[in-house]
Amino acid sequence: MTTSYSNGGMASSQSAPGAPEHILADIEQTRADLGDTITTLTGKVDPRTRMRGAVSDLRARTIAGVSRVRVQAPQRARQAQQAVRNRPVPAAVGVLTVAGAVTAVLLGRRAAKARSARNRWLPGFLHR
Image (cartoon, rainbow, N blue to C red; front, side, top):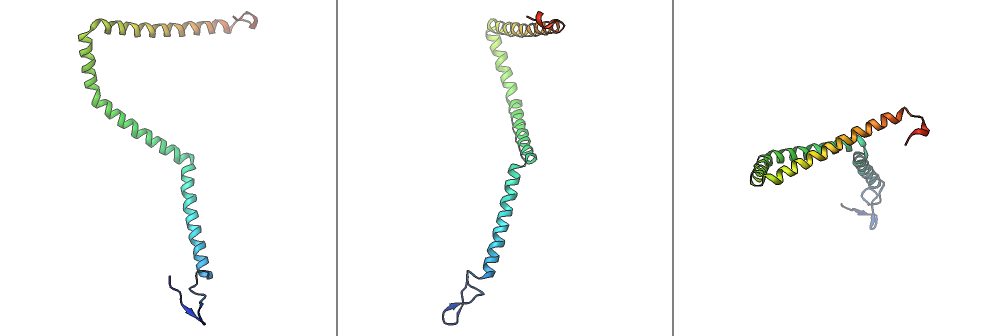
């Protein structure tokens, strides 16, 4: 920034920092900065943009997880197979426990559904 002096040490109006040209340039720069800020904020607040970003992140994490599982699955399967061969009784007990729990849940749902269907046709004062 150069300042030229004339008229006995007074700054000329063309190059002084408070000159109208400088003020207008500052205003234009502020408008441009404000426009950039608004564009950035709009991108952060826009639901469509946020959803696309979230979907993209989820897709990337899913792909990474799937590839990690593909690499580790054969090793884990061999470890499980070896564990069952080494100790078959605890493995059988665990499988039977899981099967019993699944059966209990399924039968409980079926009973609740039947109870609901039966109570649907009863008058209000006969409901339990």
